[in-house]
Image 1 (cartoon, rainbow, N blue to C red):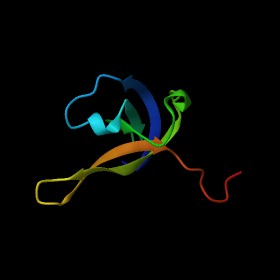
Image 2 (image 1 turned 90 degrees about the vertical axis):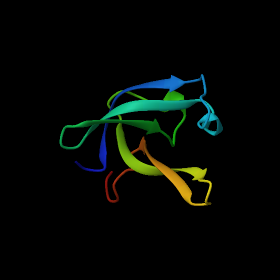
Image 3 (image 1 turned 30 degrees about the vertical axis):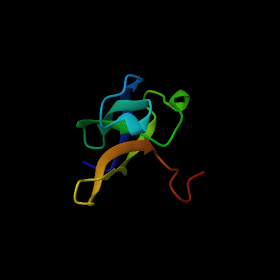
Length: 88
């Protein structure tokens, strides 16, 4: 499974839950990963209006603050894929 894929489906969540309220409204999607499996995760790095089914996305890490011992908490997320260098 590679670090990129295509957005299969998504939704925007406006009803916030404890622990995620710092994200504000957020998007969650299913991504068809390279190699076939689907993964679900947060979508970041673009306005909700820019989301499109089948758009290329890539895996990224998203900081979620720190735990009670001051260690960073992170989760994976997806963002719009950056054009490859040298591509038109």
